[in-house]
Image (cartoon, rainbow, N blue to C red; front, side):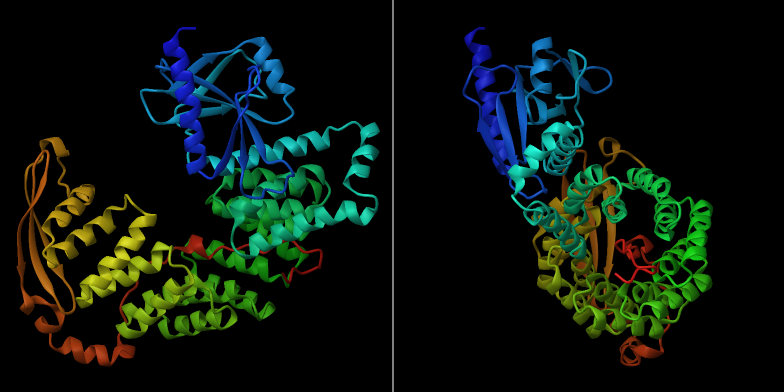
Length: 529
């Protein structure tokens, strides 16, 4: 091998080490002779296994030839394949080119072909943590599941001298899953649930919680597959039908979902969980009166359940019963003062009822609970902008932008605010980022001209003209028009604001998907968890 290739390999190893550190992994290079694994990556977060380590084989090249299906192909030896399968840990192959910064990877300890194909969509980045956790958990679960019986007593002896010592770590993992789910950290809980479910095949609560974690993490198709497995194992339990029906509902398969949920109600007619999810199913279809009655029953059967009251608030809003909706949001907050979505939605409703000060207070309470969630940040910033509190609005939009850096709406509103404060250079930058929101039907390369923006709030009004060229954006003019502000143009607006409770304005639809929060499995006849 010539010196150039050795330099590229060396660069690849150190680049990967630096990248792993930035992503929160521990990276250790293996110094002995390379038989097929160059390094090990250790996860720094707990995933319920004693050794959260994955082996890494690094292939560094000056360039890789890309295939038509957006993959690259790497040929390995039979010795590599045998070594990866017997390594004792999962192994991934990572491809690095010194012509770009991205590193691509694929799992190879289960590979059967010497030609390894790596998708260029599978990058070593922030999303990899969850994938690696799943691979490691599944690997160790499979090892435990396939262990010869003759070795079981030796392993148990290593785990502890008494049954209590053996079972205590398992109980701790189950409790850890429960804690993570209670905090809404479903993606973190899923790998442990999967590992436990693979080992404890006949434990319905573990399988049930695994489906809940998948569903809440957005893996709906996989959640349905696992839920169907639960139904095969436990066709006599109402929870099985409830679980499959909920998964089908999340996939918009409403008729099938309703049949399964009604079957669950035949087995458990007093279950608040089933009534709640049947109500959600009808709410998603716009059957609001039916949904309201079902949410009401769910709340009656579970007096301390915040989810059914949150859904009653959504349904009341959809039916135009705004004061009743506020009552239910307050009921949610009384049950759980840290209920972020209830505080944020209450703020939205108060804003549309022109109870501006109360809306801001509700948004502020939500932000105190979770300052990184962009929902209340954006809602409060928009309201502050309309009231003319420019600096506070800019601060909150920037906080939201840290979580949603490519959001066109955030950039547009920051562009407007920068125009107001005279920071035209920043305004041009943000309008350029929001081009997709402002563009005409012509693509950017063919579009040149002025775009007019009318920025009318309660206390302020501006007419802004932005000039777009093929390569740049320029603020052409910013003209304040105080007489056009809502409170100046329509003086009676201030009087209406003081009588806000008398105003009924149509609200945009809420996002119903956020309302879904399935309860965890219980062995009681009617789940009270």
